[in-house]
Length: 229
Length: 229
Image 1 (cartoon, rainbow over the protein chains, first blue to last red):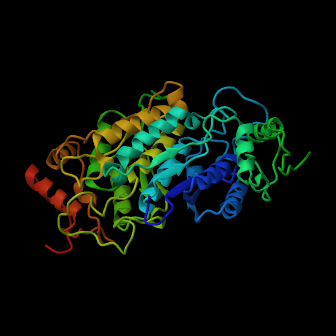
Image 2: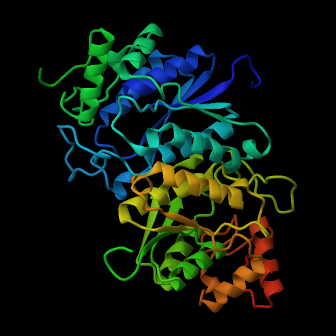
């Protein structure tokens, strides 16, 4: 615990459904939440506007957007406009995978956590209803936690910063039910890989399909605004 | 191996003595070197100018500078001008430690390596004559290598990207002798934590002390330009 009553946590907040739920869970666990969004040149910039809304609604103590130019290295449909976002299921790791994205976002979170004296970093990764990215698996999260203990002053001095992935083994429906219980307004979130500037979703990309199926399986109304029905 | 005869490597290049030597070693080992410098808001921006010179002199195939605003989170004398750079030895991890810096730089290198299909990332960390940063230790490098295998498409598909830290167990004098043998012009490099705009060194900070002692122990002339003798 820090100086005050609440312990600090850094929460990675993309503006999508999963990270909004992770923020709600961190808050319920009593953390004072410092939300971090990373502007990595993603084509779905509407996510960052969504992150601002969600941070405010869910009572984050502060919200920072850090800029890293991953578009300069390309290699993903999310950062390179010459690579199309698939609108049908694909096999293997999809082209929407952004090389080393979660490693990079956790590294930024770790640096900020150390400056804040935070005891936890929350990340909304999950594997059951996901796109199959390598850096969303439990073994990735565990490896980053091991690294964090060795990489930082805090780790060397015995103040561990835990890496919390509270959604890791939940289905999309379970995530939505948990977030709804905690008061998340999913109408504020944007999951679509190619949302328009106002945050309206395409309804066809992998992220849209997983999200829509999740609301259906949870038996809850889907508040997503779609460009076409 | 890639399409051509040479395998690709990403080499983290700060513009200092160690990373210049790591680049020379990577080249000698036959890699086609993609040099990566990270502009993280460090106060010693003369390092980036030095990195450009070194990349050219040592025949890097290309050199990119990626910008990440660590000054926004502060917490280090290298990114926060309100924290003074110590000019006498200190105990423990010094205030020049930048939270999670090497984790972040390796994450950026890992993303670029994946896009390039590179088989190795070179980083010039070492422990014997260093400032005592946690993220310069062999156990940190090993933990990042484990993470890299889990974090990427390449790792999942069995194409490992090795993390090479060829200086890890060398003294500063040994590093300087090896680089000199490989043709590194250390007059092009800047190690000082508070170099002036033209790259002249203070001669008093930890980085200057380690560098000066290294040339003395190696029995080689020190080409560093100091502001005062």
